[in-house]
Image (tube, rainbow, N blue to C red; front, side, top):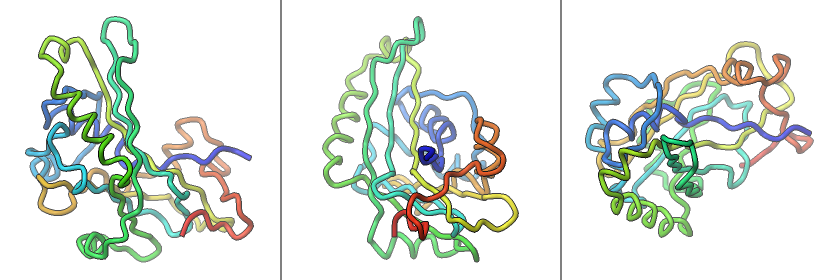
Length: 217
């Protein structure tokens, strides 16, 4: 059985935003983020944002199931000189049970899709704050010698019956500095991206392990 693939909430795109909009010096190569979102995120700062108010969200086809406890954020920094990793911290996210989070995304609902919202897991809020403190302690000289990335992913699988057409995924971020959820990607073709990354064309997204295909609900 193949390992479950990951639904990209942002990957390079979110790292791109952080590299430009915060003082964390986490850079990335490319990203196709709506211009309006860049403006909405101009005040977002990874170093100081309140982890308890940070949210990430995904809209995905309803034939995809999200694995329990599969959401995570990884902050990584490497030395430019030799590529050696000097910082790698992983923060777990849990699905939010707060109704107001989904209400805020009401206009993003589409037939045949599901919307899920995630928040920093209660047991990892302290870890997130520790990462922020570490980044704030870095000197300008240290930051200049490093390059980094911020990635967020959710483990997912598919049901046995998949309708024809692309697997379109949209991703969002909300923080204390934003006015609600801000789109990062809209209608990203997950299946096509998985095939480009080397997954088989016949089934780029792994089949859910349980007979009924219920990964997590």
